[in-house]
Length: 122
Image (cartoon, rainbow, N blue to C red; front, side, top):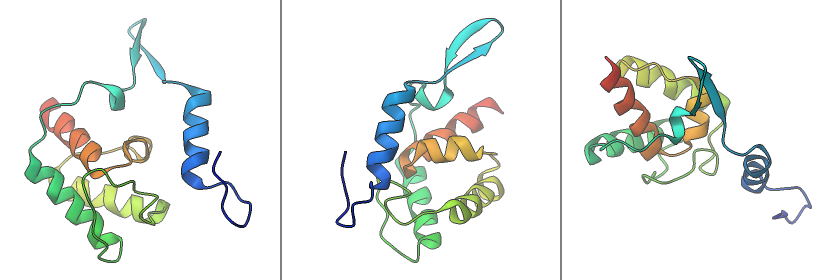
């Protein structure tokens, strides 16, 4: 496990450890086990959508450059910023993301996948 100079466990190392301990989440739907939607096979997501989501994150992260696979929390994201982004996605794209799904997605590319999945359902 990674340690900071102060001796505190880094957030990313703690998240990795928790994910390993919990393993993949399985949901019951109609009596059958189903893997979490965030682990479903990725849809073909337009690159332009990924860039739009990266730019949106940048707006809320003080103009930092955000790439498709950058981790939300590593960029300085927090729960308040996350809620603001979720609200903006709902307004701009008409897709309601759960807080849980947003935080599990962690990257603009994966959030774009969730938006594409949401659009496909409607």
